[in-house]
Structures are given as C-alpha cells and as structure tokens.
Image (cartoon, rainbow, N blue to C red; front, side, top):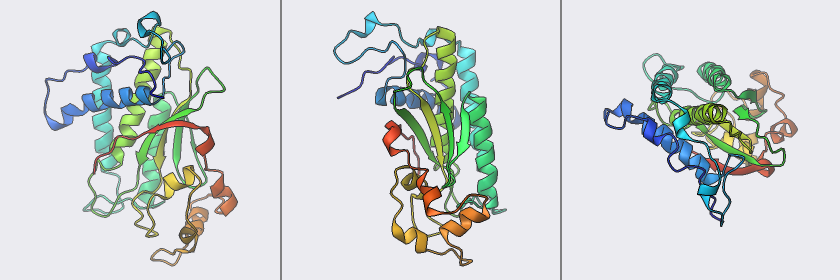
Length: 265
C-alpha cells in the first residue's frame, strides 16, 4: 500500500538551491529527508489517504515557514555536522567506538540537539539515543528516522552523522511547520542515534539497530573487545544494567510504522 505524501513541496521551495558549494547543498538533503519521512508514513492529522483527493485536505504548508527559518535549519545542520566531526577519541583522526569517551560526549550532544528540536529524549539499555515527538493519535505507530553515531578508525565525518543530523533537522522542521500551520502531527515521529553500526569494538556490526528490532545474535554476547570485556561488561561500565533482559527492552519492532535513513559512506 503506497502511502500518500502529505505535501510534495514541503520545505523544498524555501531553500536556495542555487548555492552549489558542497556544504550549501545540505538544504536539499534536509528537504529530501523530510519528504522521505512523509512518503514513508503520513504524519499530519488531515493527510489524505489512498484514494482520496489530496487537494480536499489541508496539509503542512511550506508557506507557513519563512525563508529565514529554512536557511537557519540549513546552517544549523551544517554547523552540527562540523561539531560532531570534532568529537573523537583520537587526536589526529575521527574515531568513536561503542561507548567510548568520545561516543558518550557525542551521545550527550545529540540528545541536546534532539531536545532543541522539541523532542523528549532517552537512552535505551543498548546505548541508543532516542528523541521523540508525540502524535495526537495514541494508536498510531512510530515513524523512525536515524543512523549511527559510531565510526570506523580514521572515519569520514558524514558517515552515520549525516543521517542523525538531518533526521533531527527534519523533525524540527515538522514541529515548526505543524505549530505555524495549526496542523498537528498525528503519529509519533522519532529519531534514533544508533550506538554501533561499524562493529569496531566487538567485531559485530549493527549492534544498535539489531537491538531496536530484537535481533542481536548470540555471538555478540560471547565476543570480547581488546581489553577482554564483553558487550554486557561494556554496558555495565557505561552505567547501564548490562543484562540480556535489559538489552531486550530496547526492542521497538512492534511499535514502528516505518524507518527512514539518509546515509553517506
């Protein structure tokens, strides 16, 4: 069942797409992220359903936001990518591994930016950072946006980080436009920063997203890092409960409507 996009013009006309320098191409990426989210799962109370004529229903309207706001989101996303790119365990390269000191600093910064976008925040028992805006329909499932905050050694600053930052920007845009237009969000919209995708510490990839869908393989619990610590040891060292039962509480699979990720390697 293909969902109906709430507004195919959302944000796009507000951005100055004539500025073609690499960092100034980001507004179109943010706009695309918003439209991908809306295509994955309609979020407005009065969004048209399949078979209905969309012009008969009000929708989130990009005209309710001025160009200055859109440009602010542009520059904010770019600036945050640069900040995140400086949070590293290595002095001469970018490196953030599962629950390392730099990873913890990045987690705190991402949670701060989520709250700035109007989201409530939490960290699950696998170490994933979550931000969420509640919808008006308590029965609606969640539209989840995100990517990972960990890196390989000597990483590129946009791998993973881009998906988290534009996810936050997309939610901020939706919140601002919903407030300006008076059209509330129906379904919950959330952003997740996965604790681990690269698998550097335990030689097992996608730990964060596997936890969110309840699919962590048995070998993860047996693996040890360079210091001889297990995944559960690392969680306990980081202030988490560090038990299998606790990690299982990170499973959100039954609550999700759709997942959107903007990713660059």
